[in-house]
Length: 369
Image: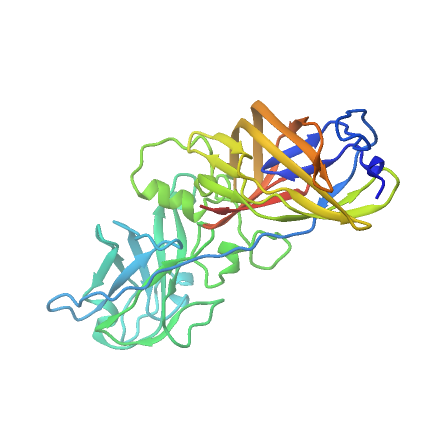
C-alpha cells in the first residue's frame, strides 16, 4: 500500500468528529487533502426488560393482585390502575357494558409496586381483562395520559393487543408498563404507544396541547417524586455509556476504498443537568487492511458539551471544550498526533440499554455500563 493515499478523514466516535487534513505518506506530516467519506454500517440493537416476581396473597383477598414494573424492572409505586373486564369495549363506551364480571374497576399500587383489588371482576371470570397505568400529566386530555400494562408470563396473550383472556379471581397477575409513550386515550393497539411512524395506521400522537407525548422514562421520573429538573430532557439518555465497534467505509485520496472496524470502549457520560463528557482514553482503534498493509486510526483525549434530548429523536448539543487527537498507525508505525475538530450531534434514539447519537444520519451506538 502507498500510504500517500491517506488524506483527511471524517468519522464518528462518541461525539461526531470532523478531522483536519492528514497526509500519512509521511506519518509525521499534516498537509491536508480532500476529505475521506466515512459511513458507519452497523445498527444498534434495542431491548427492553421486565421482571416478574411471586407475590403472597393478601389475607382474605378474593380479587386480583400482583406487581407492576417499569420496562427496566423497577417497581411502579403509588400509581393508579384502570382495569376493563370486557376488554376495550368498556373504554370506548365509557364502561357502559355491565356483565357478570361487573363494571370497569380501578386499583392502586403501594410503595412496593404491589396492587390488590379485592372486588375485581365481582369474583367471577373476567372474559377479556385489559389494564392501563393512569398518569397525571399536564397538557394531556383532562390532564391525564395512559399507558397499557403488559401481562407477564401469561399464556395466550396477543402481543399487539395484550388483554388477558379469562382470568378468575383470586389470581396473581403481574404487569409491565409498555416500553413506549403515554397517550391521551386508552387504546387496544400498542402501535398507538410505541410506533413513531406517522404513516402507520396506529402511531404515537402529540398530547392535546400539542406537546410531544412523554416517554415511559419521563413518566417514571415524574411519578418517582423526584424534584430534579431534568435539563437534559429525556431521562433515558442519562448514564454512563460505552461506545460499540462501528464498521466504516473510507474513500482514500486515490479513489479506492478501505473498510475499518473499531472505536469501541470510549466512555460517554450524560447527567440529568445535560452535562456531557466523552473520554477516548480506553477506546479501541479503527483497524483495516489495504493490499496486505495494516492500517489503524486511534483516538485519545476528552471533550465536554451541553446536551438536550427531546423524544423521539431531536438532539441538541453545544460543544464546550475539546482536546481530542487522532493518529495513523501504518504497519505498526505511529504517525504524529493530529487535532480533531468536533461537530455536535443532532439526532438520537434511546432504550434502557442502548443509546445512538447521530450527526446528519451518521451514527455511533453505545451500550449502558
